[in-house]
Amino acid sequence: MYEDKTLVCVDCGNEFVFTAGEQEFYAEKGLTNEPKRCKDCRAARKNAVKRERVMYTSVCAVCGGEAKIPFEPKEGRPVYCSECFSRLNEE
Image (cartoon, rainbow, N blue to C red):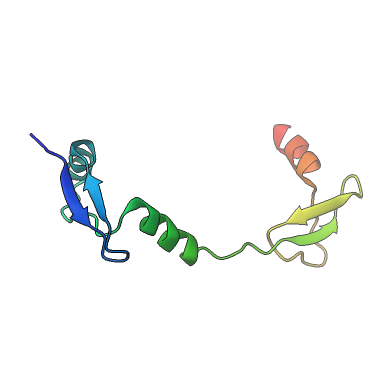
């Protein structure tokens, strides 16, 4: 039913293949537009949008070790290192 199509990337101008399998996947998901970018340009665009995650360092409330966390610690709220956090969630 589907046949491979050769498309041209809007960013780099290189040709890329929109495979029959990809076309079938798009149809299953209800996607009606063909891809406009090649795999490399899609990856570059996706990575350009990502922000670097800021990590904060604090002291673990259980063991006193270093805890690296993805949020700014607040006074009076306990912070846990990865090992202690895992142990607390197992219980």
